[in-house]
Length: 265
Image (cartoon, helix red, strand yellow):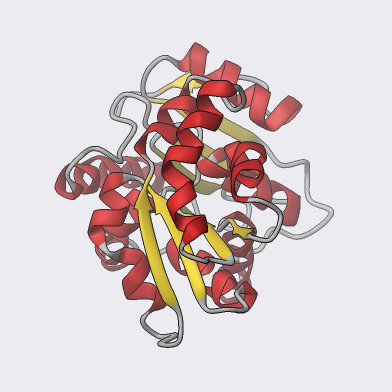
């Protein structure tokens, strides 16, 4: 079981930001990443649909034999986390609370902006998670077009900057000092987002904190792969257009992505 891979799921390529942190922080671990490109992006979909798609992928990962699951998608985390933790016997890690924990430690004036997909923002998952920190004012904003840009591989350019201003200028004017990138696609737009909001606003991504939560869960269950084991094997798959997914995955992750296969879930 310790040699089994870690299963990671996302609606597309955004979860690769989480995969990157996991590979960096747990270099001895193998991963099996599935991007649900057939149904993604999840953001515009009803949470009930997202739940159905995410559970189907997690069932596939468990049947494959993964030792832990990382829901590397904020929308899916909001839709399915509680069901998944009841359904599976292995650790299930999500991305919402790690980002909230980081934001609470970073903010100085207590005003935190959260941007995410329409479904994530509508779910109220972030305000709920921030409720344990009553002195934090949370201002949320749906930024649906960001995912579309990333899935097309467009992470810079005048059009992206213009849309970023439309989404973010109001948050800046309202005095936030911390901005949670509440979608795992958004860190791939860090350069644009940082340019638009300015250097005084700290950007918080859940990727590094999520990898730390995974490490702790594996440690507690004695599931960490021993250092000095054979080199890890990383498998990348998509539910549709695997060639396009592979191209973007190689662009965002580099040579760690050797190929991407298509899976039918």
